[in-house]
Amino acid sequence: MAPGADVPGALPGPRVGILGGTFDPVHIGHLVAATWARDALALDRVILMVANDPWQKSTRRQVTPAEDRYAVVAAAVEGVPGLEPGRMEIDRGGPSYTVDTVRALTDLEPTSCLHLIVGADVASDLGTWHDVDALASLVRLVIVDRGGVAPSADPPGWQVERLRIPAIDISSSELRDRLAARSTVDYLIPDPAIRCILRLGLYAGSR
Image (cartoon, rainbow, N blue to C red; front, side, top):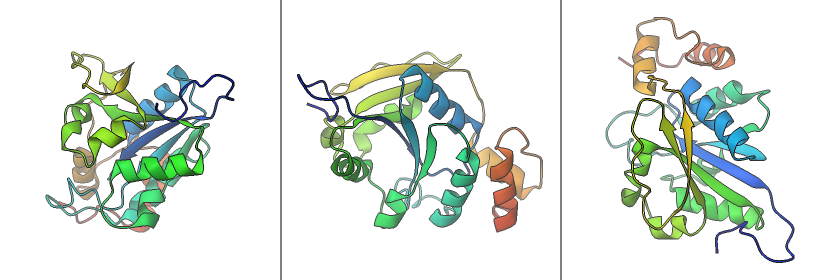
């Protein structure tokens, strides 16, 4: 039985969403997914969990240092009700495996009901994740479908909920290119996050 599942006589625990990612950089698509999941699923909070070493990406390209990515995420969600930055994977160090993060969160809040929020494109690759069968037993999977894109089939072995959000055609790689070219990213990245990026001097040489 997954953590937070209904048990006769047990008090309901907090409903927590986990939206993990490299966030290189964070953008409005991430925040829309987080806030819509918060509201649609009545989540008490949604953690934007910043990967320390996103092992499926770091072998293919240079990734911005984790502390800088965390600072930008923290700036982006400051003051947004129910959203918070997560640095558990940074503090743990090494490659970031979601199953380890979920286990740690479960140890901290044994009665919590954990919802792992992923995009439909990520859901199709879950079979490549570390210890994926154990992860499936620990969380409810929230698959975010974007408007204009046909939903994929639910992956087997998971408790699945679907969430549909508007189509937002933006990617972190495109934003890195725009920042490197000193092109505007207004309204694509929250203003506090843009100010943090400029203060830290990020992405200026990423082309």
